[in-house]
Image 1: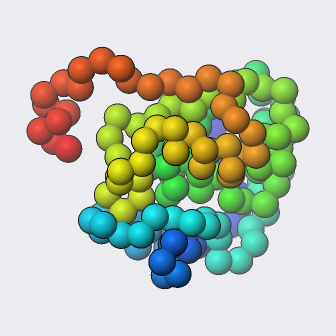
Image 2 (image 1 turned 90 degrees about the horizontal axis):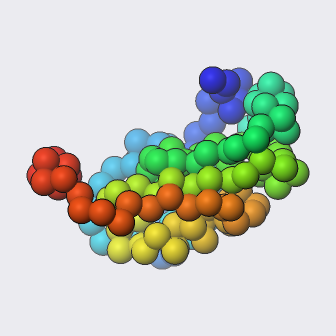
Length: 144
């Protein structure tokens, strides 16, 4: 496993209502009814780790997810050079959708909207999308 960058970036989300949120913890905070994320990135440009770019160029499969859409999955794509590397890669791009939405990030978003966001930040549509179509175990529902 390789880091996406040698520098820990500060994430920044601009919401549809004009509010700006900085920091993974703040973006990740469950805020019911919060406006959706319109733009997502870092507070200052951060360059990709060269070995990570090489790994993407040599990969057969690139897997995005599962994880919080913005603060886990797409956080990797907003590091300078990553989107371009995914676009240039001949690897299959696989997106694994979460079982549940994230309050304050993907609340009320269908999987199709999450895929649109993946395409926007990864620079290309996933070749494969993995979605659970079965019943969610009661223990998982209770914990959620």
